[in-house]
Length: 413
Image (cartoon, rainbow, N blue to C red; front, side):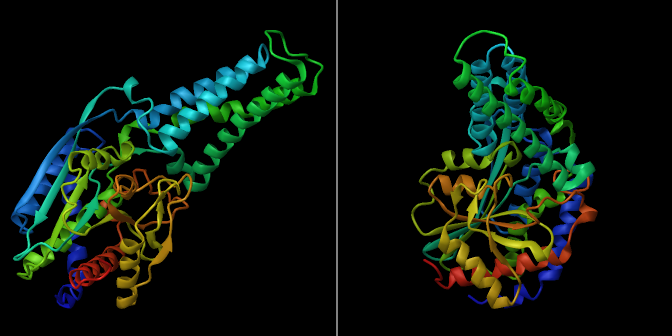
């Protein structure tokens, strides 16, 4: 099937995306993970997929989660490190143990998005959407476009100082923890294990006193997130939700139903709580879409066209995306002469929902349109419908339609 007539209308569908995103941001409740607003947005977009996009199926599905845990690790880790600083002056080995425990929690909960401390936080109900437009003949292949409907809690330091300040603050805290871990181990090796006041005349005591400069930064990390302010999340990530919806609507508007390719949309809630929706989706639909080659394109924060990127690695660089799925997006961009970079989600860069799909063995990749050196709108109140980029939306839409065309014609299967 040739879809160049739809690609030619990329600006029209970029405006459609902006209009719909504006409606959700202005007229619906805030969409923090597991909230009524997230559910409301899912129900609305499921209705759009049925009424305006020709989907025979648009199911709103619920799952249980503990969204406060994703940043709640801070309370454990920072408290352990602060206690470790005190403990150093009485028993350095306890200091070392506390720091290691704190860093393990941070690595598992925030670095790998594991459910390590979830049980200590209130349970809520999140929501996903699974929508499918059937083909006219035998199903030979399937493609899903994915985005997450929830919005983030604000990051105050990123709002006031930008990404350099935000990441710099986190790095200073990490250095402080490692600093005390090292001198605790050194003191234990030199003087042995035991409960005794640290020798005030020793160089390690002086180093520990000097290290107190890290304490204000560590205390400040308790305010890494503001759970009382939810951003609008226009770019992150209604842009990702509406990328797939716009492709589906364009097909319906043109009266096109593919013969052997099913096309669908997955809206996976609570991504900002650690990929909880996409992980729940993978569990709920395990094996359901294994009958034919199935590709998933996960969009996150489609904003600036100069940063449009296919991420070949995800989840702080720890998860590999599917090469064929990734290459197809790059080839489609090249066919249309639209710039798209080949890259990755680096350490401290977080993740897209692609990471959960890839970890579940599904063929997927993550598409982003933001500077991984964080902009000041990322996870702040500046992420609004009047701070979106129509060219960024239009370019990504055009490539996505070209991907569908090439996939329908048998590419990369």
